[in-house]
Amino acid sequence: MHIEEYEEDIYTCNRTRCGFCRNECPVYQEKGFESYSCRGKMLIARGLLEGVLKPSKELLDCVNLCATCNYCGSRCALRNVEIIEALRADLVEAGFKDQYHERIIEGIKRNGNPYLKPRNEREIWAKDIPFSKSADTLLYAGCTYPYIFPDWLRTTAQTLTGIGLKLNCLGNDEYCCGNLMLTTGFLEDFTETGKKNIEAFRKAGVKRIVTGCPGCYKIFAEDYPKHFSNFDIEVEHITQLVAKLIDEGKIKPTKPVNSIVTYHDPCHLGRHMRVTEDPRKILSSIPGLELVEMEHNRFDAKCCGAGGGMMAAYPEVAVKIAEKRIKEAEATGAEMLVTICPICEFNFDRAIRYTDSKIKLVDLMELLKKAI
Ligand code: SF4
Ligand code: SF4
Image (cartoon, rainbow, N blue to C red; front, side):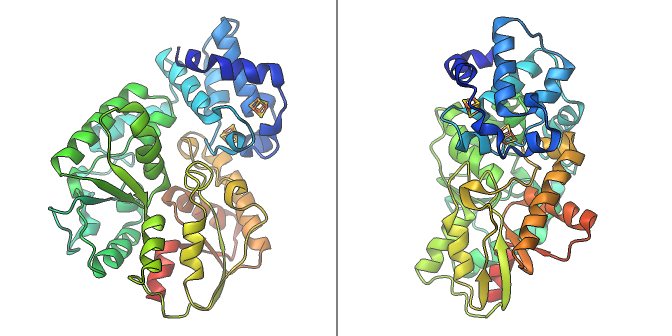
């Protein structure tokens, strides 16, 4: 069992049972049952370790209802999200798979993306962008941006190549990073995907990956080095690169954007990867823009509800969580909610429509483009 690796953590929690992880767990707040909190999941892990519990469809629901937001991890010294992912992997190996996750993963294996879209449509967004096949920095598009938000990618690529940066792009040869496979417990598929990606990067001479999707960023920067000993590529999130370029005077936001905005920290960028200040630095470089913080920001930011396979398997819970975050954004009086995660944007867009909110959802790079 994969959870055996975390036995010490699991028993530490079971002896402590402090419950700090429950306070702001978005799923626990929504469902109200112990088994949906991290503490409850640790109890399930112990039950499985000791053979008191057997894998079942009901357990799968308890374990899969988690946005992997890492709020519990920020309140606890244990490896909370890793344990939840290990629990999922054990259930998948025991034959208990969520039907929506399984369908998406089969789609990734067939088409290279989770949206059941044709592989040869992946690079449509990149038409006429002056990419360079000899560049050793790869702009990794990910799956959601090219298929769902292609304009974002065009804007970002135009901004970066427009200042003379040499970037490569794998186009239709790019493949999903495997984040959903790892986080939902489909470990074998994740391993295959990782190997395939590393080989493609090696063939293209990639030394550095820049990506805009926090999920892709986390998986390459944190999980690939843990799972693949031959992965030695430097990984940067787009906000880290752009903040540096602003500091160096290579990107100059000069056109005022007179607006009050609030910024949502995507969990995988902020709490998981500790990138909270670069996006704010980009915002503060835009003349005329006023940033007002939500009550929960940076490492304390509330989750959008969509991560960890939640949007696919439990869309109604995911949107309820997003609706709460939209309310928090509205309470700041901001006209715009800015973020930089395609999954958060997808879910917030639904929540804004469902609640008839007047707040405007804007991607950080698109906002920056208006100012340069
Ligand atoms: S997971 Fe961590 S914070 Fe939650 S009850 Fe266990 S020890 Fe406490
Ligand atoms: S990762 Fe987030 S949703 Fe999952 S148990 Fe921890 S706090 Fe709750």
